[in-house]
Image 1 (cartoon, rainbow, N blue to C red):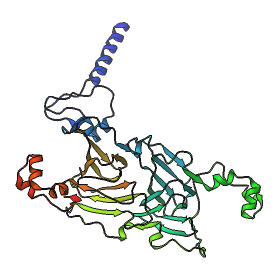
Image 2: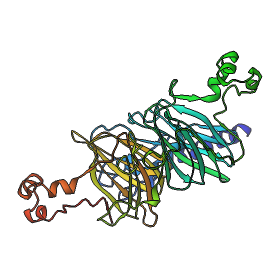
Image 3: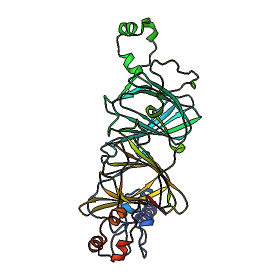
Image 4: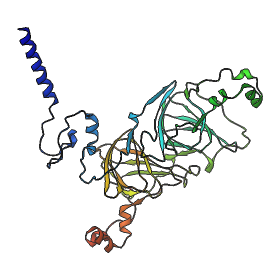
Length: 411
């Protein structure tokens, strides 16, 4: 009897497990939004093996939703949620470097969080650093090669740019403060890229330190080893005065207040587009950027960038982009807040807000002194209309009616 019950239980278990392993029932029509690679026209089949259902649901275009995708295009997307978070006293940091996103040859980045009073310790880099505050407020302090200094409070939308070698630090001023960091080097975390002041002092002979500073050696007994990177502190109340070379102001300033300036014209009326590069932020000679707000269902028009790769950080909303890399190769990607991407130099693409109700906000970064793009529509509109009509096999009147002005964003 026991054996019979055991066999019965085993059979029931196998039945349950077998039923659970069965694929979802195939229904009519495309199943991409249900997380299945089925186009509803005879192509595809259900996924029956291991898969991450949430990722499948969030990235229907990875399942073959776009019939216009073709060829072999490498992964151009990385989420900060996939990065290892480094926990520190006073905050955290998570990075995206070339080993995370191999298609990003020019840029690496990080999200960094500081609590009130917490300090990103004094340091400098072999590369330029660009920062964008998106929550809270921070105090930046920096000194350049001429001994000029700058101490400034930055709020939402404010940007800093520290040139290669400029000494600097950042402190949190509100209860919680967070910002995007960008570097004009694909692997900014490798040895020889960042130099911490306490790390240097801890590895310099004490008698040399005493001679250099004119102090007793014992002054340096408590220098942290290893360096803390971020540490708790109290909000600075001291002012810097009487620097022999004065302050960094005007065109020499390391700070740019994005929303104190007018955005670029947007004839397509699809949102807001701010350009931040050396034309309006003169010190930013190696990193050019845009801040974009695109309205629901809006489109960043088809275009390409003639001078650099495009690195992107999606801050809010949901997006879709198809990247054309030439030779019949194109691939569509789905993006959400926290995602980054790197589109190849000169590749054609668009960005679409796929939400019906929520604005899409993102930042574009270029390793260049300026933002530059060539829109597809404008190019065709400024080419003889009969040549365009013959090339694309479209009516001449359509070619003649194409808009000659950049639309930038389209609603």
